[in-house]
Length: 214
Image (cartoon, rainbow, N blue to C red; front, side, top):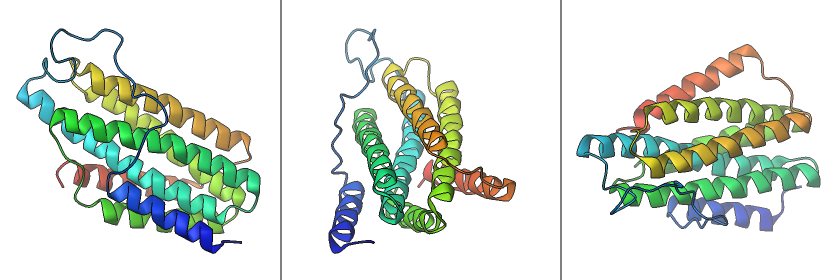
């Protein structure tokens, strides 16, 4: 049963996410070997910095959506164990959110102007997945995180080779997302039907293309 405290905590998370008030519990990943001078941006050309900023903005939108999805699925979880699993994954996504915001600041770039829309949409999807039952909710996590893992692998290919700072963040995020997917699968996640997987991929493409510019 969803309590008043649950709703208040959910609203608080939304406000913190959308006001850029996220705080990471883990240190931000940094490259082992940094170039001399300004280790974060000095070696990047203006074009490389713009590309890195656009890609990290897209990743930030993904983390905004992750906050909403996990919050909604925790609210609708049928068991305390699943609620705890969703909350724990959500806390790691909060780390990702804070890391990307810091990296965007270092790049002199911004977050998406449509973040409230992304959050609201993802929260609604998370509620629907949770209402469908725990196995469906877990299966949705598996498919979402597998798609995010593939998306991050693509960004590692596209990020400028000199942008070691962004690449360190994305690499750690990829490891975390794979672990979230594995945990959801082991907890009994049901395989998503092909039409659902295709719809999720199509929605992700729209979000990605929009977030790069808005």
